[in-house]
Length: 222
Image (cartoon, rainbow, N blue to C red; front, side, top):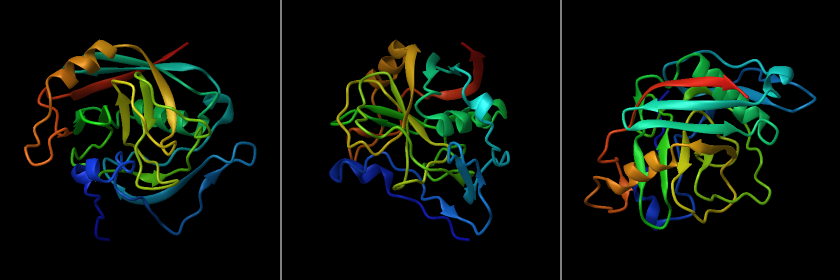
């Protein structure tokens, strides 16, 4: 199946659809689902660095945790909002525990109008995905102050592996699932942002000049 890629780096002209990832195309297979939470992970393409599809465990999903990204620019830690976005945080934990993000890099930095660093694509192109998709959560009244961690998407209910950090208060429509809050490393994000991005044709939206290579994501209980 031919891969569909969104034109990420023209997004400043067409806000608020600014934090897109590849459209997740669902495959005709049964979703993993629980009636209690309606969490479902539906097989989808693309499937880059495929690690399997999560089987939701409500008991494990409820356990609080923090995630520390060890990057080439320094460590960034965030508290997972397991009580507000259990499906999303369970998926992130699954991918991190399977080393999905290891040796990937953050491929997009925006420095005008919206202020985010986007990561989570193992291909580094903005077109990668984990082989499944899942619905949005925690959107009612969602805001995006500095330190927010939220999902990138290609439209409603197309979440996969791509996510973004907000390094400066940003106004966005409530279309992107907030699932974490930075507790350490906001200064690292701001250092990366101060380094600027490399897109000469569309200034303010490009690859970060300071490469952000994710070496590992460690999950710790809280």
